[in-house]
Image 1 (cartoon, rainbow, N blue to C red):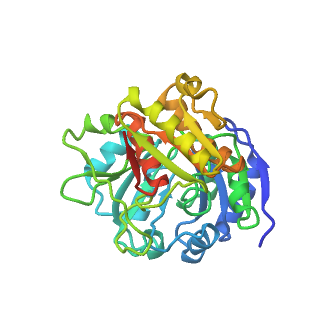
Image 2 (image 1 turned 90 degrees about the vertical axis):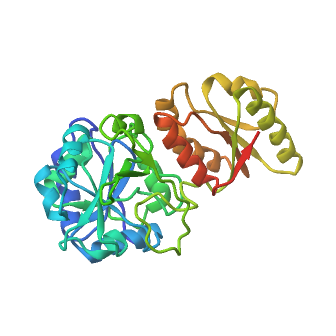
Length: 349
């Protein structure tokens, strides 16, 4: 156990003193949680295998699950990757800084445990001012998965980080809530045909403007499987403590089916929670359940989703009912997170 220090920093103009303190900790091999535009990351010096190992210990993360490296300038890319295709620079020019992760060939500088022993490395350049300031002050590539205990809903605020990692890490930089709320899109450029391994903050449609036949290769892998190519591909991930029941079907029948199931679960003695868009919340009026309003747009739903799961866990519910959204734009990333939170189980209606 360590004493976790928390520094409040401006999300737009981060103060020098806490940034410098966090950078000193990273250079010394410690762990720092910091906001990015997607979710909070748990950072360590990416070139120090012992420091990277501390990430796995703090999170309880299996060694088979690779970690994304974060950079602040293009000059660092050749420090962590090799045989970089020209197309990677074209993509970086359009989407960096931002929520796009590229999988490239790993440079020998990068310890094997960053990439779970794979010959590849996942790299991105965040846009959040706090993340950028920290990376500049550290002047090293920083390995950073989401700053939460393994398989829990990702941390989108410093409070979420405290809930999961207080006493396990050195510093939390509290820069307010993450804006997007779901992780980066992961694009693998090491195969003959580029593929998306995890949908995320950059919509598939934006990438298809450059890669017309781009496909998503969705895998539900177990922790003991080898060759996990990217973070966020495990069967159980982003999961609340409560059982999450994911419904899918036509809008006209979704809410009646969820109402019926809520009544059934309550009849079994379970405390029920429900996650619903704003314009659907009134459709379950009269039921003795905990309802969290996810907002109106997919951007709002994305921003609130993980926090909403944690709210219902905090309320002590036994089951959480939620339905899927569109499979376009951010809706595809939302579906991916919900599917894994539900451990791959879908209730089709």
